[in-house]
Image 1 (cartoon, rainbow, N blue to C red):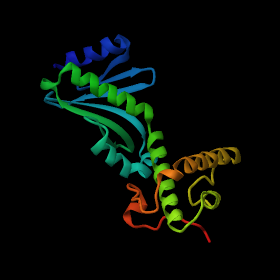
Image 2 (cartoon, rainbow, N blue to C red):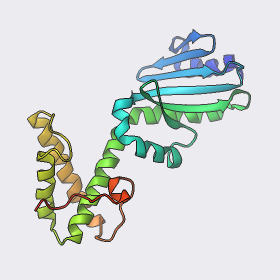
Image 3 (cartoon, one colour):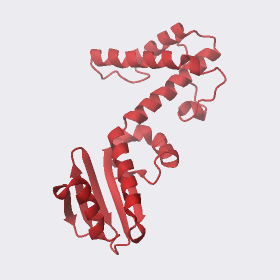
Image 4 (tube, one colour):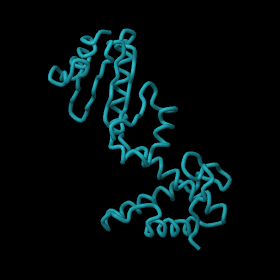
Length: 209
């Protein structure tokens, strides 16, 4: 594929006006919520497609999950930090790039960009709740007492939320309660919960008493 053919793929997909050449080796694709940059190497042997996701500050709490996603879930696309931004990146040798490979990469970039950090936040919350359930079940605590523990942690700011308005705090706490109840029967006291701080040996939250 040549640089001109590469841009033509995006023009045929999103329309002529969606593609803007912003530098001799770079172009921008903007279509509805999609923002995508194409950057060629100076020798035009490689192309890199980048889609912005979030600021680096927003992404930092999820770096461990992002690296795990790079290994397990993102196929030919990778998360990367650059210029205080979290990006989705696809890189390929231009001469060997086939249209099907490009189409699949663009679909992955688009889907992951739509998800943003929300799915990572949801996964992180689920891991935290699994750790709480595991610890409290190991201590013989019931679902009801664990719900009280969860509310205590949240109200004390141990699980975030102190800077939220009261109605948002209550809605968020309701979501935590719902997920804890949903997950309660799926976790056994001896289960190993992977991925978050508890997997590294840090004590998991348990009853404040």
